[in-house]
Length: 380
Image (cartoon, rainbow, N blue to C red):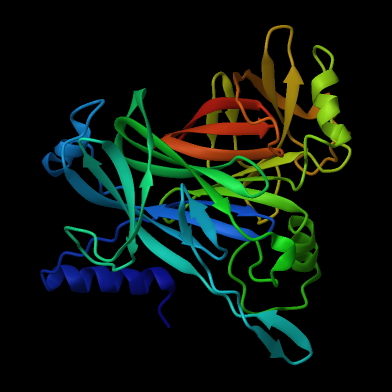
């Protein structure tokens, strides 16, 4: 019997002999799971900024000419609102299998079209059609976008989701020297909805695997933010749920002394799983240090340290330590953080990773009015 690689080789040779050209587009995605509610944005790297057909949208740094391009698809298993546009997901029906009651997974999926006019840029939310399209059909709603001209050029289109609280996320789009953002909010509290999806993926069967059960139980108390680079490597951040500004752990942030890390009594340390090496300034995060929650090649604990001037991000080789148990002997390195203070002082703790170019990204921490970030490069 031929092995998998032999069968693949035969298929490739057969297609070549037939004179067929087959192109498989890698699917990139950014996903957040907040209280077991999942929101995903998917896109392909085929949308190049230097393509002449996109110049109407991208040539002017401040005002686009008329035009539209389908740039991504958004999928959710819970009702959301995007800047006044509501996407409803019908609540699942309970399905009884043996002695277990599960719920049938319901998903809403829509195309996102970047559209330009004399009034600026917007997102048209349209029915998901698939295949090559030149114009949106059955537009569901229109979402205004906040636009910024950025220094780092992204030669291809990039989309990402940054959690900004327990029930909301920021949708970020990058293309050329343009950046657009809008806010997305879940409408229904998780506590009022039936169980739908395990945060590690769509699992329609259950096996009595103690390791899987332990892993699932751990993640039901934590949120995740994941980036998938093509159909291959992933970067995933795992952090505690419902870390509110009213809780005593937020007081630890406010009162932390210089050169000390911020501790949390109600959750484990923020965990960062990587499938590929990353470069944060002078610090290289390599794979191979530990196993991950999902058997990732590398995993790190991420700590926030108060410095004499500003803040620093500390990477530690103990990714599963409790939030009060930082051991500096396992520190792998630390980098300076960029800091912003926003207007919303009520945001729960969130941590995420988002790409800003095909091979560069940003690690983001948000808590209350505070927002920290550190840039990184994906190493080949």
